[in-house]
Image 1 (cartoon, rainbow, N blue to C red):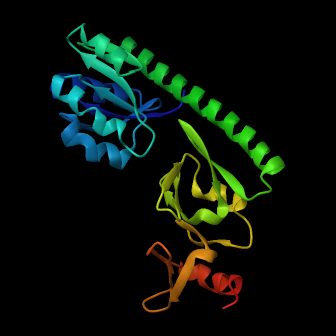
Image 2 (cartoon, rainbow, N blue to C red; image 1 turned 45 degrees about the horizontal axis):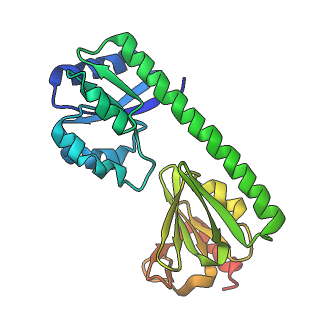
Image 3 (cartoon, helix red, strand yellow; image 1 turned 90 degrees about the horizontal axis):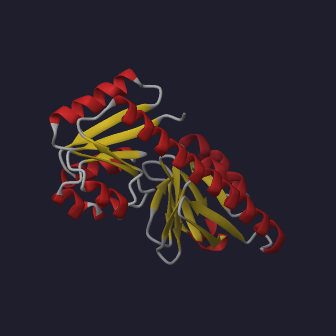
Length: 251
């Protein structure tokens, strides 16, 4: 079973302590990366760690604030609701939670919930990988390499290469910045796009950036090398890549 990263959103100290103790004793399958009393105070924690799972106490306040999580730019974490109230199981169903646990929490129930979350994520990834393979085949056969497929868990988009200003590493994801101001987040890391974008216009100037040189409007050499782009972005050229980049654009 894959390691699941989790955050606890609950103001019940006993339940928080119980889940943290479980994680210590079962560190191979779960890592608790943080906890908070409610969603509004824990949203920055969630953005920072981008967990697979949130153990959530479905209080009235948390249910009102759950859209803070639904609106995140990265893949929505899975929920396991934890409550002393059996009727909250219906709220778990409405919010598409993976499971509902009744307090006090039982070890076997926690294990089963984590297994369900891990299995669900594996199924999503398998489905997504198959879709990526299918779209890559379409790209190679019909699109003459002018487009690429950009995949996330819940969607796949085809975008023109010429519309890409730059790609930015965002943890294990990649953010595409396009000429119309759109930003598209992909579930693949930046390194996986180096070959896909490999043509005469794209260059990796930094471990965090692949750029389209067609959209450069200026290169500055004051206090280091920087590229300035048509969308007003200013990106650094890593020192070890400066010589190669200069040759690439024939400086």
